[in-house]
Picture 1: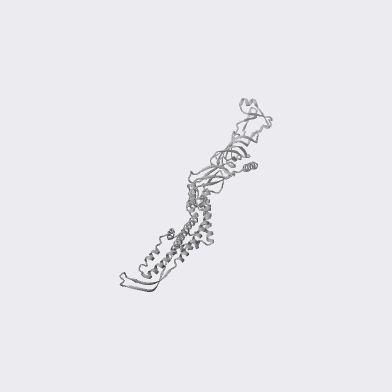
Picture 2: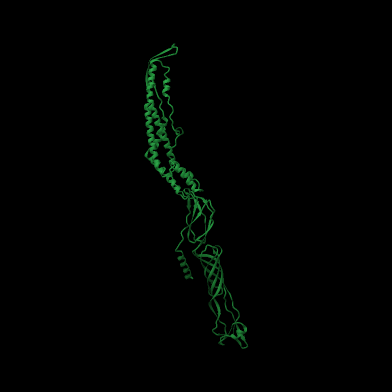
Amino acid sequence: MKYLIFTILCIQSFTGIAQDKSTILTINPYGNDLTKTKLKYDSKVKFKITHVNSFKIEGTNSVSKESISFDVPEQFAKPLTEKTDNTIQQLKNGGDFLKGTARSDYIRAIENLSLKQDSINDLKKEFIKNYNCFIKTLNKLAIYTSVDAYIDNLLTDTFIPDVETLKANLLNYMAGINDEDTVINHLRKKGKEALDDLTNCYIQAKGAYDDLAKKMKAEKVQLTGELSTKDKNVILKIDSALVTLELKKIFEKEIEFLTAKFDAINPESKRTEIVNKINIGVDYFYKVKNAAFEVYTDGQQLDEDIVTITPELKNAKGDVVKEFSPVRIKTSGGLKVDFSSGYLLSFRGDENYATLYDSSGIIGVQKNGSDHVKHAVGAMLNAYMRTGNDFNVGISFGISVPTDDKRIGFYGGLSALMLEKHRLIISAGIAYNKISLLNTANLTKDAAAEKITGKETYKFSNGDYKEIKYDELYRPAFFVGITYNIFTVKK
């Protein structure tokens, strides 16, 4: 028996040389549930689950969440526009109450201011242009550095029903902030250019503001003359009066805002941080663009006749966020060896002869009937190749337990294995059992008597020995057996 088991195990080792690669079963959360299938024994299986937000489930999203503020307060958000400046005319009108030399001196001072007006207007235009440029560039940087947050908002759900639509919408958004350029990598360069533009706009705006401050210094006038009523009943004479014409500074709040923002962004460390943030957003975009939005479960060895696997999705913390329907897998291929026990029936039994008499006494023996069957309880070793079905065919070898004070019997043949996990086995083949056979050493055939009686008849050839003797010998016979699988030797 040990040689038989060794031979079977050797066969198994040869059949196991070539192993199947891992099989991938696809689960679509928006399709029909996969509940059962059939695969090769001892292979590996893993599940591919589609339409899954792999950035959330696998926890692979390492996007930086540090905030860089580019917010523009509402009072500074609207672009500046140039307004009609009638300051000089208003000042001229203000001198109407003066008379004589006082009026002429005053008008002369106003005209001096008027000479500055063109350059003042040009500086105002320059400031407004660069102020608006600064705000526009600041808004660009705000959008460039918030790409990762925008994508995070798109990827809040566990499942993505329409992956292609999500990718198309994201590309449209990225192209929109990239000046309709679909090569999103160009955004990296534009981020650096925006920082340079921001610096240039600030420097130009600050220069215009400083020049404006110089141009708008106060104009002083020494007045002499008189003030009088129309009817000249009251006259106020001015011997000497110093009049200072002051122009109120403009763009003070705007330049304070620009300076505060520029000082916060301009340090090299902060500029590097902004560039890195933009790069992270672009990298994130390409990760999403190239993502299959599917995850794989760990491989599972199929080392049983039936393996039931329940695929699960876990988040980065290891918490189960989704459990799918169990998948029942029947395995095929690979040699399996089981032990079963049960009832064995062979169709050959012991011979039974009776003493034959005549008037002179005992003259021989005559067949009195024989057992045509032999009952036994035994154990069978069943070897078979899996088919993945509830019915299999294999070969079986076994022994019977001695129940009649004789030696054990041996059995071998074909088997049909039925029911789930092949619990019930029906076997048929050749049995070798020890049976009682008539010893004919002191007997000779009596053909004449057989012809008359129709029974096998022998006469004693030596009259001194008239005893019926039997030999216990192994003889083959057809057998059938019904056994039940009790355990597995080789899976």
